[in-house]
Image (cartoon, rainbow, N blue to C red; front, top):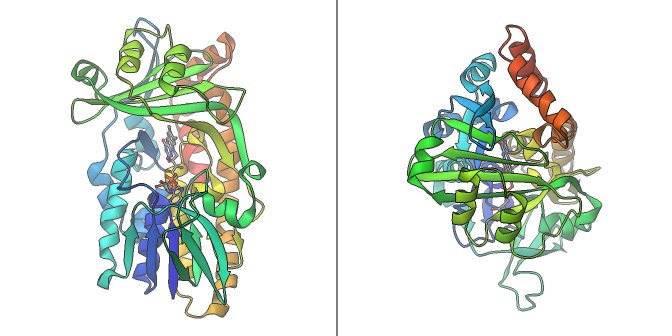
Length: 396
Ligand SMILES: Cc1cc2nc3c(=O)[nH]c(=O)nc-3n(C[C@H](O)[C@H](O)[C@H](O)COP(=O)(O)OP(=O)(O)OC[C@H]3O[C@@H](n4cnc5c(N)ncnc54)[C@H](O)[C@@H]3O)c2cc1C
C-alpha cells in the first residue's frame, strides 16, 4: 500500500514512520527546502507522552529536552510578580512534562524515520503541494505552488494524508476554503531565536514572561548563547498580517522593559508571525484523503498541547491504517481513526478557548486574577487540582 504525506512537521513525520513500520511505502512532501530551524519552546505533556512511549519516540524526545525550573512573570523592571514551579507541576503530572524546542522535536521525529527499513519512507523537500485529483482508484498529488502552472511532477497513492499545518493546502483542495474551518482567537503570535549571551545567562533554566495586559512576551535561554522568544498580542483584525512584521512587533511590544527592547532590536526581518487560531471541522476524511495534526484539529498555542496531540493523533492513525492491506479497508479505517481520536481533540480545543483570556489578560483585574491563580498553585491540594485540570482531563 502507498501513502503520500504532505508536510514534514511532527504529525507528518510520525504518521510516515508508523505507516512505514507497518509495511507501507510512504513519500513525504515538504514545501521547505530543509528541516525548519525556526521555532519556540514547547511544553510536552498529555496524550502525546503516552503515545510517544508506546511507539518508542519518548527517549529521543527526552534526550533533547530542556530542564525548566519555573515559569516566572515579571514587571517592566524585571521584578518577579508570580511564579509557577515547573518541577512540582511535572511531578504532579507523573514526572512526564518535557520542555522541547520545536525544531528539536521535529529533528527527533526525523531521525526516527530511519527506523523504517529498506528506504520505504522518504522525504522530498522543496515540494509544495497545492492540487489534488482523483486517479482511478487512488489519489494524485500535484507538486508545485499555487499559480505554478508548470508543476513539478505528481505522485499517486492509495491514501493522501494532509499533515500540512494550520493553513493546510490539502484541506483547501479537498474540503474547501480556509475561512470555513479556521477560527481566529483574536490574537497573533510571533516567535524567533536570537543570539544574545547576556540575556541567555539571565533567562536560563526558567521561562520568563511579561506580566502585561493585552500582550505577553516570553523568553528562554537555550544551551548555546541563544534566546528563544515568543510574543502573543491581541489583534481584532485577524488575518492576514500586513506590513513589516518586525516593525509591528516593535510597536506592539514597546514599553515592556529593556529585555524586550533588546530582543526586538535583534529580531530577524521575517520572524514566525501568524494568527492564533483553531481549526474546527465536522469531519477529517473524504474519499482517500485524511487530515492529521494542526491541519484538522489545531488547538492553538494557548492550549499548550498541539505538539502532543499531533504525535498522539499520528500514532493512532498509524495504528488504525497500518494493518489495512486492500482498497476496501481504507474508508472504514479512516472513519475509525476519526471516531476514536476526534473527541479528544474537541475537548482540548474547548480548553484552549477557555485559556485564551488568562494567557493574555485584557484588564488589570484579569491580570490580578492570573497572579492569584498562579500563587494559589503553591498551596497543597490546589497544585494537584491545577495539574489535574491541565493534564489529567485530556490524558484520560
Ligand atoms: C508560538 C507557538 C507556541 C506553541 N507552544 C506549544 C506548546 O507549548 N506545546 C504544544 O504542544 N504545542 C505548542 N504549539 C503548537 C504546535 O507547534 C503545533 O500544534 C504542532 O507543531 C503541529 O504540528 P503539525 O505537524 O500538525 O503542523 P506543523 O508543525 O505546522 O507542520 C506542517 C508542515 O507542513 C509543511 N507544509 C505546509 N504547507 C505545505 C504544502 N502546501 N506542501 C508541502 N508542505 C507543506 C510545513 O512547512 C510544515 O513543515 C505552539 C505553537 C506556536 C505557534
